[in-house]
Length: 108
Image (cartoon, rainbow, N blue to C red):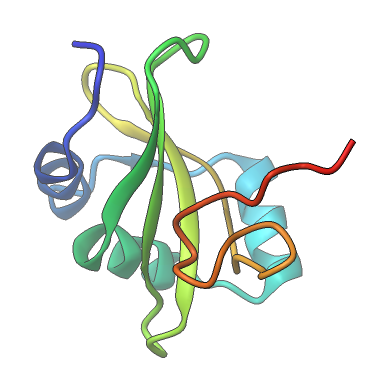
């Protein structure tokens, strides 16, 4: 399996198959994002970038909605059994286009 599907991620998410690392929980706290926001983003969102060669597991970037209906990005990996949340953040217009899906070109 190279590319992840949002349907697969939703099924695992709704079966409580999420791994929360200490690192991601610290980042969520710093960014004022709750676990339920991440779960809601997976359930309402779409995959906007695929990272099939990510090590050690394929990963993706999801654009979804927090519980407060703010757009958030969630990066997660799939180990064949569970979803591991890598990070979550509020996308900004300095890095993404107004659709919050397309990365802006980096200036050299």
